[in-house]
Length: 425
Image (cartoon, rainbow, N blue to C red; front, top):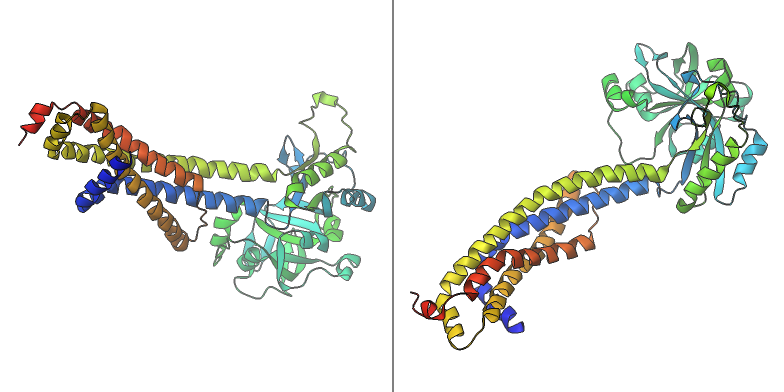
């Protein structure tokens, strides 16, 4: 075997250009697969970190029906839901997996948000305390948060997210200015922003609708004390729970969900099922990450199959060059068989040469793929994570390609008649 490997390297380096061109298809295919897998793995890691391990470890416990989040604007009956008081909130905070918690109101509003001639729709309105802002991933960019007097005096003040502020004020300083929410004037006292990596540039009202309007992602925060004045009805609180660690997020959310739902008594009237009930449910952060990762993985699988076509082309190239090599070395094969070399020896020599050729191509492809992955990361500003299993599999796969596509030329060499081979010109 060692002698066969030595002869293989000798044959490869004696025809450097031909060998490189033969390996090129393998190199391109492996490089494409490594780059795709590394980029997708990096993206998946970032998805998981941003949703689960971002450092805030916060879970929303929302009001839902049939698994879908609902709010007062949906016109449902919330009378069976408990009114969350300080003692209930203290109970939630006492759980071992819970570090802190805050309550808040939330509803969507589809019209009636105005400033001057600018009007927005499809925003979320939050009625909350400063604890909500502190526990969430909002960061204060400008102005201030709510003061104690804002709550005590029922002041009509609000905090906007930065994109909503820009869409309404178009570059004008919003602090101290007034917007209209459902016919009520509110003074803007602060601007907050999500602590995310993706920050779309908003330069017009149309940009706002492009990035946020369809998804109801604009956010306006008001003191919870003013909520009944603003909407003229009471809506149950939802809960924001901060877990002690990333691993405790699911446990913290489920315990809070189960505790709040224990106050709900199903009447079973009018054929109402458990799914029909309005109840609390913690958002499944891990499932969110899993769904996004599965989408990424399905895309990467398609791309890998496309990249594998170049491996097929490379394998055909290996077969072609090995057939040429058999033809060139016909007299050598005849001489070896004449002095007693068996078919298995000849077969093993050419299979080894094909495997070494494709393995070298696989190694060069891995190195090229790693460099390509980092190049794509720098140019496209996407995360990258090199997958060691993908590297190992790629090299082994390239070796297998050499064996498969080198088999026919090797069998041809092994079956040559020694007399005919020696007479070959």
